[in-house]
Image: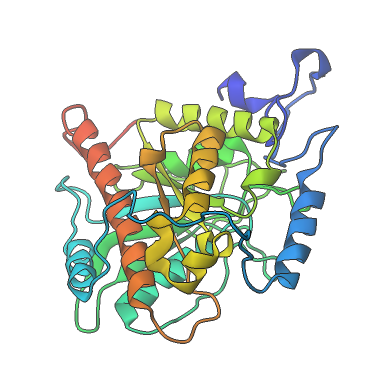
Length: 349
């Protein structure tokens, strides 16, 4: 195991070498989002309480919150929705040995991972549907589960699989270890595996995939970032996010980010999702997300998941499908990068 992630890694402030005490057979530390001087869990809890009290976003009188034109060109039409649905439905990986692209959604609990999966599937179902929240505190939420995005009625499954796993720790709950995250990406972790910080994934894990094929691997990672929580994140959080991204990049896996809950930070977007790319607050929050993750905003797209709605909304559908299309562009880049080096499907990792 690489010593860089076998010890001294927590999802908060980096652990200094002076504070590290060697122990025998150390298990990989969890990504806990805490530090000795600052605890994110309390802030997240306070933020959650505030969210419940605020039913609608509140604008600032006299402050320009909306631009006259979009800063990203999106067509909010039924034709555009149909075009995007066709693009997603017909997508197939360029590698002949891989039938479906596997995308890992990675983020803290309640960042919108499961809701995104349900929302995307809702678009293809033609009605709002919700599946059990894998990252919810109301169930075990420690398993790896993959969801095939089904096409419209009568159509085959799409070539996209969204993978939901245990959320990154938020201070209240123990999160995934860096070792386990990388094991999932490499394709070693079997479907339905129950994660435990005390039992890192290894060759003794039931169902462990010793020699994963290209189809077992994760082909793109999508970080889920809650727009409401950006301001409460501290420097240690961002430093560890960047460190995590470096490890993932070393595996040749491209990363994007989805900025969730954008309707809750902008009154204009809450009224009409098509205002999202005219919103100054959304653009500013996206810049903050880019700084937090250490990535250009060109990798980041906003999304609005279905929550309390009973009916689909055209503009929300277009935004969701645009996010999926964005992800698939980077999935294709992965296969393009792998093609010359791995003509077969078997990989030794």
